[in-house]
Every structure is written in C-alpha cells, then in structure tokens.
Image (cartoon, rainbow, N blue to C red; front, side, top):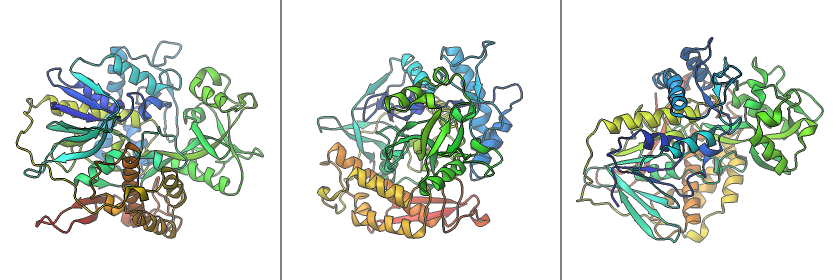
Length: 527
C-alpha cells in the first residue's frame, strides 16, 4: 500500500501533523491498538503556555531550562515557548473547549517548577481527551486511520539508505507492507518497561526499538522521568494523580502527618518532579506510606472528576482527604535523535512527540510541556512536508531482510519480569552494581541478538517483549555510562551533577562497517 505520508502512532503529535498537512497529500495513520488507547488521550494535567498578564515566553523558557538541568537544546526550547501561546489560541479559535475562568478567558493553573500560572486545561483534568476528541472531529478526508496494525520493521532501501516504509502485522497475524517517502514515528515513550507507571498499556518503546534496529541514532535514554504521584494501593499503582492537584494546594504528607517536602526545595511540593519523586521514594523505602493531602481543596470532585473516578473505582474514600501515592515511570526525555524539524539520522524517517529526543526537555521534562511538544512538532513537520511537491514512491527497492542469529522466542522473559527488574535495577535510584546486573540479565535473554533478528513469525506479545528487551538494553547501557546524577537520572554512587557532563549526550547507534559485515554497536558521547 502506498501513501504520501505514513504516520506510526495516534497521539497528539500524530493527529496535529495529519490535520495540518495539505489536503492533496494522502496520509495513513497506523496504530497498534485503537485510536484512543494511548498516553495523549489519558493526559490529565494540561498544556503549558505563557498566556498570563505577568507571564512571558522567556519565563517559560527559563523554567524549562531549569527543570531540564541545563541539558536542553536552548534553540529548541526558545522556539517551543515562543510559539506556545499561538498554538493554544489557534486551537481555541478552531473550537477546542478549554476551561475558562469567571471572566471568560482561558483558566490558567499552576504545576511543579513553573514560576507562573500557565497551565491550560480542558474538561477539568481530562485535557488530553478534550484535545484528541477535538482533533479527531476535525480529521480531513485525505487522512485514513488503520487500527490494530503492529509495526514490526522499518523498511530501509539498501541502495540509498532511505526509509521507504514499514512492515506491520494485523490482528490476524497477516503481514502488510506500507510504502511512503515520509515515514513518521509518533509511537510515544517506554513507560510500560517499569513495574510502576502512569502510561497506557500500549507504551512499550516499540518506535525506539524499530528506529535503533534500522540504524537511527538514539540519544539520552538514561533520562526517565518518574511522576511523583500515582495512586498506590495494595502494592500497585492504579492511575495518575495529576501534578495540578498540588498546584491547587494539595500537600504531600506521611501517615503521621509529617510534610514530605519540608526543607528539601524552595518550591516545596511544587519542586521539579525528580526531586519530589526521590523524596517520596526515600520514605517508601523506610516502610512509610505517603499521602497526598487534598483537604485544602474545597471543590476537589468538580475540579478533578477524572481523578475522583479513579479513586472511587479503587476504593479510596476521598472524604478522608488523603490519597496514597507512589512515584512511577511517566516520561522519556531521550529517544530517537532528531533536529528541529523532526528529521532523524536516516533520510525519509522522522520522529515527533515522546518517541523523539529533540533537546526540548533536557534531563527532566517541565510539567505540561509534553502535549505542547506534540502540538509544536506536529505543526513544524507539517510545514516541512507542505513545502515539498508530492513524491512518487520508488519502485525499484531492495530491502534487505534481517538475518542475524536469533534466540528462540520461547526464551523471551515475561513482560512482568522485565518490568520488575527494570524498576529494581534501572528505576528511580540506580547504582553501578544494579545496572551491571540488569545489563547482564538482558544480554542473557539475547537483547543484542534480537536487535539483528527477523521478527516476522513472532506474535504481537512476543514482538512486544523483544522490543521491550531492546529498549531496556538501551536505557540500561546509557544509564551505566553517565557517571553523574542529573534530572531524571539519579546514580546513588554518583549523587551529584558533574560539570564535565554538562551538555554531553550519549548517542547509541547500530551500524555496519563499509564492507557490510561485522555489525557493531556504536556509542558516542557528544557535546
């Protein structure tokens, strides 16, 4: 099947791109589940934009740089924060229903590490649902959405090194090939690699593994953000409790009422996420329960209807004014390395949204910059495509098959085992010993061999486990190499930021020597 633009994934970045493209371009969106089963649709918090009277994009810029621990690409951050107000205004004028204040202006909330009220919400705490439903209602006729197709391989033409399409399996196990001059990965991050996570069940790092297998550069995979407050009951995390709750006055306390964040950071409960997550983790490790005290919020149920429903479904009595919480994996700051237009190191392959490492987030994402990033880069990439004439799909293609030695698929570890070990050894607090043990465990299940193996005969579940192994390998290897703590990456054996690591990225790339033999793994540290 041929198309002008092929988008893998169906979140806010994918839909923004599709809706902004010229209508003479044929567009296909492939999603491995249904169109609304992803992180964007689940997003509670909001979208950051400097819309307030006392706010300015430069303040938003500084907050983003500070939260990212100065590891950000300053040019990318400036572009993002400068365009944020117009992105919101364009959506509002087009009919997207954001929450309004008593004067009829867009209501602005506060979240962690922001110096001003600048968080735009929709539906109280269902901003993602509000925006995605709106975008789907505006879908143009030139855009076709195909659900339940699991992409298992990027098709790279041997003659020119360009990505020319993808290979995917439908729900019946039949393989389909889709060809396009522009292949866009908008597959999200990898939150489901961890036992405790806020992420949708579909977010298993597929796009990053696909890109790495194809030879694209991957950057900064050690930077995983753990959200401080997931509903935690009976040893399980059961849903996200938005940072906006603390923005409205919620406080973190222990079971005996002790303030968790007292004296730890000038911004207290609204400190950057890595600071709060580590503080909660410290108390949990001591066997204490941590609660989010919501008693100061008078209108909690009307302000946070989604969170109220999550709590009531899981037997949490909100009349007691306390929600038990724990940190969980939330967002990947690293990913497929791209430029400011979403272009990867492979011609014809692009990445946007959480799957991409654009430099926006640095070492730790500022709250509510994720939906904003999707809007920004979806629009940015559409401008690149819209300026180009339609391309004819090449007919004379030679796509080499993956022929590496493959472990037996029966030996793949279970998803639960991968998640438990990643949480223990490559989670909130890491050590050389834990990371080394994790890397050895991943290699023992053939992580390096799965990078080069043909996956055609694997089931959906087996392919997911293979991709999870590959992505877990990239995270663990990168975390072992960064011998400092910065943002979402905390090494107990190297607990402080090091000046010599400032601005240095860890780039991972699978490549072949000129003779086409002796495949190797290349890891570089770039400034």
